[in-house]
Amino acid sequence: MSSLFPALVGGSVAERSALRFGDRSLTYAQLAASAGELAARLEGAGRVAVWATPTLETAVGVVAALLAGVPAVPLNPKSGEGELGHILSDSSPSVVLAGTGDELPAGLTDLARVDVEVYGSEGAVVPAEADTTATAEAAEADPSAPALIVYTSGTTGPPKGAVIPRRAIASTLDALADAWRWTGDDVLVHGLPLFHVHGLILGVLGPLRRGGSVRHLGRFSAEGVARELNHGATMLFGVPTMYHRLAEALGEDPELAKALGRARLLVSGSAALPVHDHERITAATGRTVVERYGMTETLMNTSVRADGEPRPGTVGVPLPGVDLRLVEEDGTTIAAYDSDGTPTGAYDGESVGEIQVRGPNLFTEYLNRPDATAAAYTEDGWFRTGDMAVLDTDGCVRIVGRKATDLIKSGGYKIGAGEIENALLEHPGVREAAVTGEPDADLGERIVAWIVPADPQTPPLVDELADHVARRLAPHKRPRAVRFLESLPRNDMGKILKRALKHD
Image (cartoon, rainbow, N blue to C red; front, side):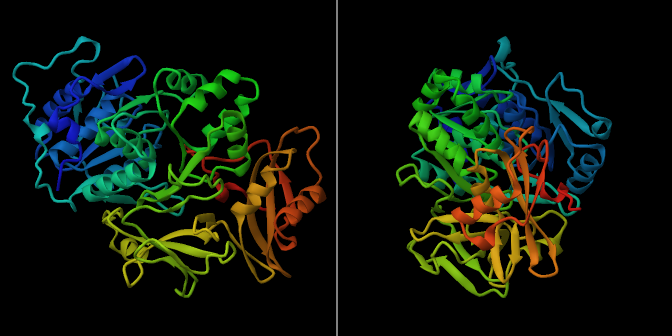
C-alpha cells in the first residue's frame, strides 16, 4: 500500500504550510520532524488514545500513530466519566497522547502519558538525538491494518468502536479528491472537532494526503471563516448548524457574503442542510453548498460533485468504488447503481428504501462486538446504514431520515421526516423544525412537528403549518400535531437528538 501521506515522505512541499491552529503553525518539514520523532517512540505501543483537543498536538499525535502503524483512539474531551471509562475499557490503549499543558480527567491518570512535542512551533527545534526515520512509513503496510478506532455516538447503548482500516482512509480521501477536484493547492478552513470522522479524517488527514493546507479555527465563527477565506483559503467544511449561522449572518454582513463567494468549494456534512439555508447562501454569495453523505462505519459514500449540477437537498451520487442500493424491509432491492455508475430500478423520487453500501471505504468491525458486526451486514456483504432515502429522477440520492427515528408509517404511506422538515423550514414563521411519528389508533403513526418559532411571541398557527406542508408536498404528509419549543436538543455535531423529544 502506498503512503497515506506522500507529501510527508517525499518532501516536495517541505516549506509549505501543513497545519495552522490559531497563531501556531507547522510546515510539512516541521510536521514530518514532529510526527516522525513521536512515531519512533510509539512503535510497538499497541493502541494509543489521543486527547483530541482542537490543537496542533492532536493532529501531530494522530499522524504519528499512523506513521508508526499504531491504531489511534480519539477521545472526546467532553466525554462524561461513564462514557470515557467505557471507551478506555473497551479499547485498552497502552498510552494516551496529550498536549504538554492538558489536564486529563481522573479516568486517564492510570494510563501512561506521552506529551506531544511540536517542533517548529513557538521556536521549538528537533533535538539532535531525535529519530525521525518513521516518516518513511513502510510502503508495504497492510491496507487492512487498523488505523483508527472511532466510537459511535451510542444513541442505542454504549458507544461502539468502529475499527477503520488504512484502506478506508485512503480510498475515501482519494474518491473525494476526484469528486471535489481537491488538490495540494487547496487551503481548507474549518472549526470541526477532531474526535469525529468529519473533522479529523476529512478535515485534517484530507489536506495532508493531498499535500495541501488546513487552517483550524479552534472555535467556529463567521468572523473566522471570513478572515481565512479573505486570506487565501479555498474550501470550507462545516455542519448544518454552522451554515445556518452563516446564512443568518449574511443578511447583515455583505463582507461575509463576499468572503464566501471567494471560496472554491463549500461543503456541508454530518446531517442534512435545510434547502432554505442552501437558497439563502446561494442568493447572497453566488455559491452553492455541496453535500456529501457518510458515517463513522463507512466514511464517505456519496457526494454532489464539484463539476456537476448543484442539487440542494440531495447528497449526490456514489463516490468512485462505492456500491449503493436501496432496499425494502424484506430485502427486496428498490433501486441501485450498476457497475458503471448508472442508476437502475425505481429512481422516481418517491420510493423509499434503506441505503446499503459496500466498498473499500467500510470499517472492519466493531471492536469486541462480533454480534453487532454481524448484524450490521447482510448475508451478501452489504452494510446496513439505517438511513432511508429515495433516488431522484436524475439518480441523485436524497436522504429522508433514519430508519429508527425518521421513517413514519402513516395511513399506509412510508414518509421520511426530512422532507417535511425542509418544507416547514420554508415557512417564514419557523426558525428550526424536527419531525417525528407517534402512535395513532387510526393512522398507525401520526406526524408530529416540533417547532422553534422565528418569533416566540407570535408562533405560526397549527393549521397554517399543516396547510403549508400539504401544499408543498402532499396532504398525507401534513403534521397532525405541532409542539413549540425554545430550542431543539442537538449533539456536538449539530444533529437533532430526536430521542430526547418526548411525546405527551
